[in-house]
Image (tube, rainbow, N blue to C red; front, side, top):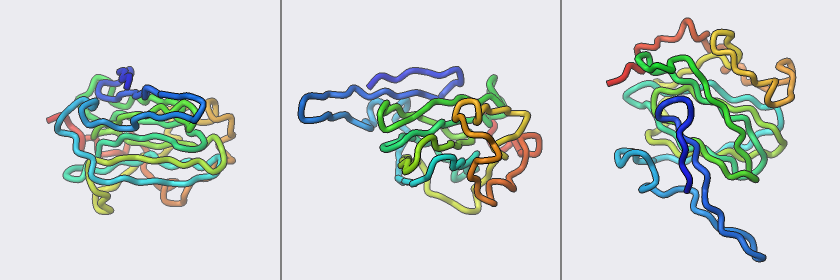
Length: 188
């Protein structure tokens, strides 16, 4: 597994070593000893199926149910985005995006203190993620996907006009970045 740092501290890109031959291929999708900290313990796996143009996010969970995530696509493709919400971070409010697909097998490790979202680039996209904490409705939060302060280039990367995004009513009602309580993710 080749693990590289991104422009945001703690946010990592993982590229598996793929062993292929005329029968197909094999690769490890996760090894605990490859992860940046022995304290990461994934306890919940999630999967979603989405059609082209579905935008999910930007979501997070607050302490004590904050989550680190290891995300990947097994079929189809997404433009995956993580936004740094750690108030004391030098990259607070910055975002990083990467295309994850069933063809490139890339993964992102997203630590606690980040909002996360993606837009699907193909029909029948299957998105999977491991979480370090259980889902807690009382701890969930989010930031509006098209907040001008964050300025994520969803349409530029996806090629889909914003007025054609398929976004849930719940996600359309999320607060702006300026109205987000950033104290929730101060560094310890």
